[in-house]
Image 1 (tube, helix red, strand yellow):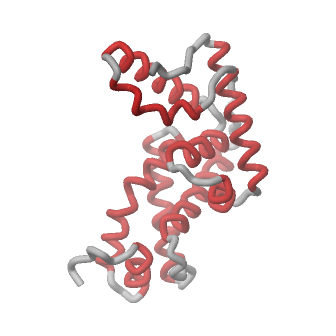
Image 2 (cartoon, helix red, strand yellow):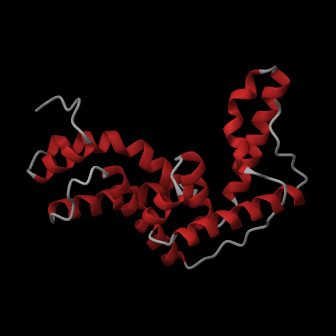
Image 3 (cartoon, helix red, strand yellow):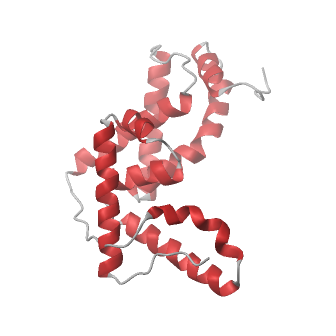
Length: 199
């Protein structure tokens, strides 16, 4: 089968298990951009992200070949879980906690207001700066908080999905988001950053 159009990720994974290496190549090409973006967002270092990405796929290949994958309709979730575990292993090896300065007055719901940015050039520039400021502050969050912010606001996952993916309880996921928002509000206050998008 040369053309995999219409073949699901799950079917591709099972085809690879049956010996079709081109199915895995297709799976890799479909998955790599989204997965690498997720890893990069959490670790903030291109070389580290590249290493973790490769480790994720090595582990995925091993698990596939050992028959540890069944078609549950959630291949992306499955491989994201492997990536999450690789990221956590890397952080454990580093044994370094990043202390976060924190701020007040930010509700990340404003991120969803991107559609108002076309009102005028000045508004567009202000809004662009607001989003840059938010991204800089999110970059300063501890990895677990940064990860939950990414999953919630960029991947639009539910807290149950985040909990399942990261292997923690829903309460822990909610707690991480709560602390992330507290930290972001504190940072905004400390640096006197106005985070409201212009309408």
